Amino acid sequence: MITVFASTGTMLALNLLFVAIALAVGFAAGVWFVGPGSPFGSSRSRGRRDRDHEMQLAAERAMMASQRIQDLAKTMAADVGSHADKVEGINTDLLAFAANHGEEDTEAVISAIGQIIDANNELQQRLVVAEKQIEAQTAELQSYESEARTDSLTGLANRRVFDDEMQRQLAEWQRSRRPFSLMIVDIDHFKQFNDQHGHPAGDEVLRVVGSVLVKTARQMDVPCRYGGEEFVVVLPATELREARTVAERFRKAIEAKVVTFEGKMLSVTSSIGLAQVQEDDDQMALIRRADEALYK
Image (cartoon, rainbow, N blue to C red; front, side, top):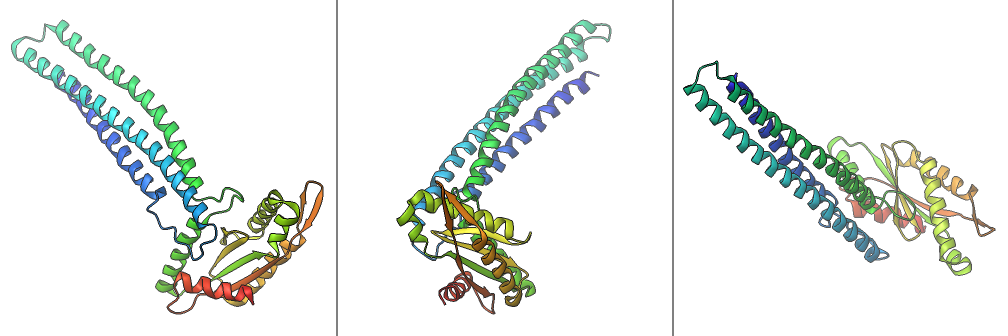
C-alpha cells in the first residue's frame, strides 16, 4: 500500500511535467506561424511597407504572448519537478519505515500519506492558477494570429492568406490537375473618392466592397484584400468559362451597392480580370495574366 500511494503521486508529477513541456513547444511553433519569417511576398510595391509594418507588429505581439506562455510552462515544469522530488522523498521514507517496522505502526504511515495529499493539493492549486493564465495568453495569441491574417480595414483575409491559398491551389493543380481561376477586382476611379470626399469616404467604399465580396462569394471561394483599391478572389475547382459567370455576379453586386457616407450616396463600379491556371504556372505568372486581363 505504501508503494502504491507514493508511485501514484510520482506518476502524476511526471505526467504534468510532460504536459508543461508540450505546451512550451506548441506555443513556440505558434510564434513561428505568425512570425515575420513567414512568406509575405508581394508583386507590387504599393502598400507593402504598411503591410510589412503591420505584420511585424503582430508578430512581435504574438512573440511576447508566446514567451509568456513558455515562461508559465517552465514555471509549471519547475513546480512539478519539485513536487516529484518531494513525493520521491516521502516514498523513500515510507519504504525505510516499512522495512523496519510492523504493520501495527500505522500512525507514521498515515502521516506520510497525509503529506502526499497535501503536496498534491498544493500542486493542484498552482496548476489551476497556471491554467487560467495559459487560457488568457492562448486567447491573446489567437487574436494576434487572426490579426496577422486579416486586413484591419475590410475584415477580409489579407495577402498572407492569399499567398497560402495560391500555393495550396497550385500544389493541387500539380498533383491532380484540378483547375482553378484567379479574379482581380479593381474599384473604378477610386482616387476620385479620396479626392472629392476625403480618405474616410474611400475607406468606407473599401469596407463596403469587401462586405459585398464576402456575401457574393461561394462557400469555396477565398476573397482577400490585395492592396490599395484591389481585391482578389481565388476560385477553386473553377474553369475560365464558369469564372466569367462568377465574375459578372460580383461585378453586378458591387454596382448595385450604394455607399452611404455623411449623407452622400456614392455609386461604385469595378473592373475585373480573370485568369485560369495553366501548365507550368507559378503564382506570379497567374497574377500577371489576371492583371493584364483587368487592364484590358
